[in-house]
Amino acid sequence: MNSGGDRLLVDVASPDAPLKDYDSDLNSSVLNEQISSSEREDELGRLRSSTLPNGTKDRLLSLLTVNLNGMESKTTPMKNIQTRLLEELNARRPKSLAGPSPNYRFGPKAHLLQPEQQHTTTFHDPGDTRLKWNATPQTVLVIKKIRDEDVKEPFVQLIRCLLKKNMRVLVEKSALSEQNLLACETFVSMKDQLSTFIEGCDSLNGLIDFIICLGGDGTLLYASSLFQTSVPPVMAFHLGSLGFLTPFGFEDIEEKIESVVSGHSYLTLRSRLQCVLDNTETRASPAPADSPVDGCGRDGSTFVILNDVVIDRGPSPYLVHIDLFVDGQMVTSVQGDGLIISTPTGSTAYAVAAGASIMHPAVPAIMITPICPHSLSFRPIVIPAGCELRVTVSDNARDPAWVSFDGRNRQQLSRGDSVRITSSVYPLPSICAADQMQDWFNGLAGCLHWNVRKPQKPLQQ
Image (cartoon, rainbow, N blue to C red):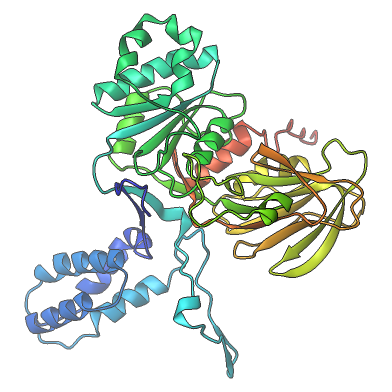
């Protein structure tokens, strides 16, 4: 995964992660074997030429080299050490958020038909996705909540910290003209050292190594909108109203930034949706292949979103009437106030208020949630992330519908207009304060007060 500046890799640990828990068992099993020096070299050679994932191979080579070099030469035959170690590993279920690898043999005479290689997808363990830099990050984009007095001091402190590390700092040009900042002498003294950009005019692709957000969840959504393709890793500080997507507190900021720059961080890869608008205007004059785009990579008809795309009735007093297609097949006709198509990250936004479930961002899925449907049986559903959706305004609709993308770029949809929605190949890499699970549950409890209630009193004796 490339951030545009070729500075970022995502280091995904393979099944070698559980090995650290089994060191003592594996050491014992190897030391109990008796081998000759020639057998030792044969086993090491076989392991080096194996097709194991690199992380697993390196871990096993290290373990075998340390243990075997300390042994005296013996002559008793032994089993293949690689096989023995892998048996030890496979005997235990690895701790993976993706779940155990399923057995594809079904009874004595059936098995899964193997697809062609170009149609297969490899899923990494989302619970062990870690940040790795190709080179030390140099350029930082700072996104702050605008016109917020509570953010002023943290913003000035952050700028001072980054400049002290000799980093190039970019901020939005409008932020430099905020009166509360211009009244701060410390900020004014640093102002000329900052670079600026204007949304929609200046391209940031390939210029930014990582992003720091100061504010609430809206700052993360705004940062996502600035990058319609590859997104640099995002470090989000909780200085807003809710902050479910912003896991970092602002205390000890220098130590936290140093830890991230050193590559000691987990990532949550938040999936995004690509939405293509097909309306009367785009059909009448389709954009040529070399049509101009704005600085964020948007061409006016394609949007990559982090939370949700919402199709609703707008100011009309009538029910919205839209048709929903999944992979080209019409699945239902929606009559109600509207429809929400969201990512797992967006499950805690509009969707949860409309009755959807809360979903962990590592789950590969797309959520479909009706808004006040005129049917008691129309419940929210979850479909695989690989599906393609199309939402079309019915020819029988009484009024046009309206569409918005992460709450922005709101526009009207006439009869026959549609929005095509697929999972984007460019997720947003959100840097974790702790890890994917702890951050998420901390947010549920601290921000959404999930299942908070007064404990039941015990029965009196």
